[in-house]
Structure formats: C-alpha cells, structure tokens
Length: 277
Length: 104
Image (cartoon, rainbow over all chains, first blue to last red; front, side):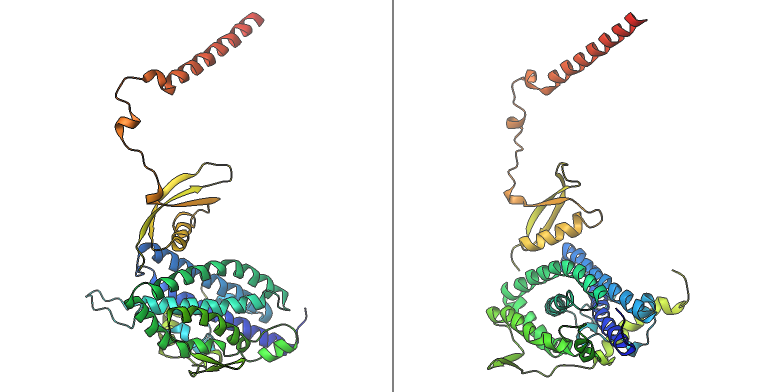
C-alpha cells in the first residue's frame, strides 16, 4: 500500500496515539506491583500492565516502519509534549511509598479498577474496529491484541462486580472514583489530528469520537444495575453528556501526573540516549 | 468483598501427560481464580491445560486406619507382583544368554 505523505503522517500520529494510551496506562498500572490488595492480584494486575506495554510496542514498531523511526525512541526519547495519550491515564493511583509509614498520594484500588475496566471497554471497541482496517499491518497487529484483551475485560469485569456489589464501602469508593474519572474518561474520545483523512481514505472505518456512543451503551449496563453515577442521558436516539470531557491529551497537553511519569519513564534512557542495550 | 476461597491448581505440561498438583491460591471469585492460576502457574512456563479446583470440593482421605488397615495384608501389595516381574525379566535374560552360549 502506498500512502501519500499526508496520510503517512496522519497514520503515524494515530499509531503513536494508541501506543501512548497503552504505554502510559501500562506504566501507571505496573505501579501496583507489590501493593495490590493481595499477592495473587499483584501478579495478575502487573501482568496485564505488561501486556499493555507490549501492545504499545506493536504500535511503535508500525509507526517506526511508516516514518523511518525507531520504536524505542518513540517510547523514551520523544519530548514530553509529543505524547498523545488521554489525560486520565497519566495519573498515579498508588500511594507514594514512605519508609516512615506516612505514605502520600491520592491512592485507591477502586480508582485503578474503574479506570482500567472503563478504558478496556473503550480499547475493546477501538481494537475491534481496527481488526478490519484498511492498513493491513495494523489490522494484523490488532487481531493479536484482541485475543489478549478478551482476558483483560474478563478480569476487569470480575473486579467491577466485586467492588460494585460487595459492601457499602467498596460501592462508595467506586462511586467516588467514577465521579473523579468521568471528565478524563470522556477525554478518551478526543480524536487524533488527521483521523478524518484516514477515514476518507478508507484506512479507518471508525474515528475515535464515533466510539463514544457504543461505549456509553456498554458502560450504562455496568452502572445502572449497581446504581452507580453515569455521565450521560439519552435524548431521543442521541446521547447527551452531563459532564464536560477533559481534552487536550491528543494534542500533547497534559497535567502534573504526566510530568512525574515522564521524568521517571525516560530517566534511564536519557542518561545514555545513544547507548546500546 | 465476597468470601475468599482457596483453590488448588493442577497443570498438564503437554497434551497426553498427567495433571500434576502445583500449589494453591486464594481468590474472591472463580473467574479471578482462573486468572490467578494462569498468572501464577502458567506464565513462566506455559501449560497445555490447568485444572482449578475449590479446595473444599476435594474429597481428602487421610484416615490411617482406612489407608493402612491395621491387620497385616502385605500379600495385597503390588511389591509382590513387582518381584515376579523382576524374576521374569531375569529368566528371559538367562534364556538369552543360554542361546548365546549355544551359538558359541
């Protein structure tokens, strides 16, 4: 397939956007290693986080092939405002360890579970639409990713039901987490620049913003039975949002959570950028 | 949180091989038990199959009077049969040697 320079650029940017979502969530979720609610979950959650980093790698390799770049450089040597993940994914959900015992930070397992599961529901729709996309290498990669993501959803759903349905405390924590997360989660549906071009060229069947309605349908079936807050209403056939999405991530605009993670993530590589690994 | 249950995990390394007990885990639901079984007992070395069994569903027999009857019954034990298998093997070998001797 030969692509015009505009399409090549748009597709590279789109691939980086997906890769960044996966890399950033994978990095943040891996922080639960050692502090998850029980040792079995510790291993499982970390393993899922590693899967996401593997998916990021697939996207960076494809982007590198398109733009004559390097996958590692995409992951670790890009300037901090050239990462395009949604902002909700960059915040820490674990406490910052303090040996004196006064751990700091706004940490909650319910927030990690809610973000993870609702992101996976979004990612599932995105991956499904890409398995038949017009760019063969991406379609092939997403078919593999889809086989792993089934298990992620399964894991997320088990925890969602556990927290939503077990005790007043677990329900309250999930509810509070959702109220905090909605603006950022709605920001997942911000489009990468050039998605229109890709759709017109037959490469993308569905733009990111078009995944919002089917996502809301699915999320509603997760919230309603448990009387959990939900960010939209149906007016006729259309969804109307009650909450303003937190956007800007797809343009490289991020918050303090990203400053911390970026510094940590790139620390080793930037000590010796040209080093051989 | 739903009550935590203990599950015992058995794995088959290759198709056709036996299931062997690997260890146990704790999980709040059967779905999570399946996840944890995969992550803990199949991730480092991938299994052909896993069995994940709630511990309380396992019928354990540990009564010594039941397993080791107090009256002497060694004649029932397989060891006696193993002796005859070994004797037959020795006999066959001797026969073979005998025929070699005849050749020479």
